[in-house]
Length: 214
Length: 214
DNA sequence: GTCTATATCGCGATAGAC
DNA sequence: GTCTATCGCGATATAGAC
Image (cartoon, rainbow over all chains, first blue to last red; front, side, top):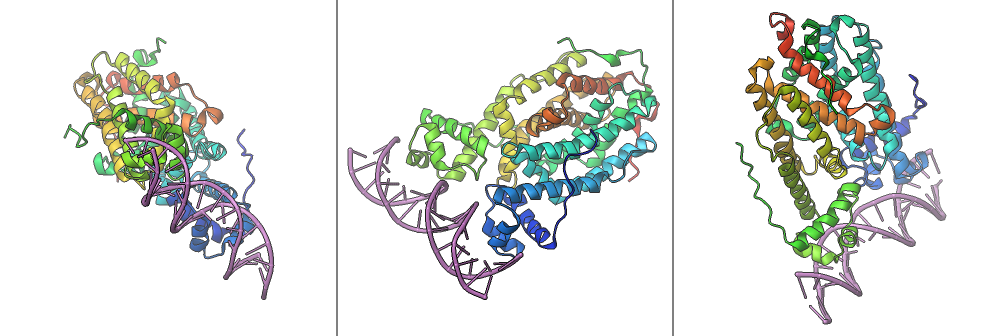
């Protein structure tokens, strides 16, 4: 359940050189918009060299996205379990998340995974499983070990927490919201943390267990 | 400020016929992956007819996305100002949002706007302004006219509300989260509404006005 | 206005020398 | 293993008949 059925990569220097070039082109031009000639030029190798290391364009693309997804996954979640005071920890998570995800390469990776989610559904699932599901799981576990926070549905709140951060990055940095409806990241994070922590301060007899009528 | 500097469309039947065909192809194949031959076949016209109505591939693509964005905008936000009891209204908004956005065409439109946000930034800005900014503004106004909810930063909470819904749709339906980490929409909405409404039930002297230390 | 036919170019993939 | 040269195909865009 917790282990991923994806084997770790072992990459030769030449393959990494090719992937670095492929990354620059695919991330900015998309799958269909990328030509193998351009990748060869950008990587500083000939086209045939690419075909000798990866089966074809599709194979190169899959290898690139798996490589980026898994390496970035390790980089973000290497800390293991979450610990500390709620107010401090949530802000820290948001801060790390903001600095790691606001990175240009990572934003382009997300955009590319979304763009090709129909043509390459397995890659989208890999991304969802390793990045999003894992993050949600870690935070959800933290909530469960802190019952004093009064969180009724840890998984849902964890999804709301990360979802708010994801949509912020998406709208502000990918959809150019920073130009037409700018909002400070700290402002969003502060409101978000206040929302979640306010659960522990309220009268639990009140209408917090609102139920749907559908 | 509230008016958009985009003139309403007047579309001839032939143009709509072309746009309908273009929609099917562009939404599933992306910009670079779409051929004008395919659009012509799908629309039931010849290729030259397309070029006589739209200047080129880029012009056709822009016209399509502006057409879809603006027409969908009118469809969702025709209700004007929001009214009603908070618990009822928020759930109603989430319900409308869920049914309108979960539509396959609309999900593909969002994916396409994201995918081409770098090549066509003006289209991304148009989408952000007409759809996201407008929705956030309406909900923010509602919060401002209901001070009893105890919401300190209406704009931020409105962003969190819609952001949670957007990211849910994105992860579940576009990134295939429904296959690897399914979650019921009502479950998320219930937790989200509880979070927001809990603000009005708490002791306002407590740590709800947590401040960043950065 | 709309169609058929065509020009021109860049693409993915391969063959063969070294 | 890596390079240069090339094949075959499908792309955007246009020309000219009706």
